[in-house]
Length: 207
Image (cartoon, rainbow, N blue to C red):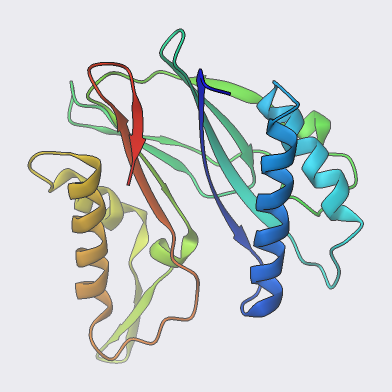
């Protein structure tokens, strides 16, 4: 739909080929449904109903979905049990945390009453950050003590970026995470990071 921009991030349980296939199935279903359905929350519900009959061994898929309506310059969020949405507010320099809601795909046959789209206030110089728990739950060990990267450090890495462009935020967070984990770190979980904003012409972009 030319007047709508859709961005989403997801995380399937487990690792390896099976999780990759779940992600591919979800992506294919999402693309198919949003061509024929208008309501983003209904797309999520329909995708879930098909996935539910095809997943096994307690496999699930979380999603966080953003929709930018170019006609009215408004941002909307639909959740399916994914990590929090972070929004950097240019005017105040603060980061709003929109706490996770909804239910992951594959947990129930019908998640209609758990799925809803909400409006997220979003200014021309604000920035949004979607991420997976592979970032906040990354662990390093110092002197025998394990430490998580955590949400507070992620927020600080965002605030430390001088120009606050999506690309700069992405680069600084990934560099800070890499520095935190150290050279000896072995990645055990998927890491996803999406940073975006709106241009003065009202176009949504992400990195």
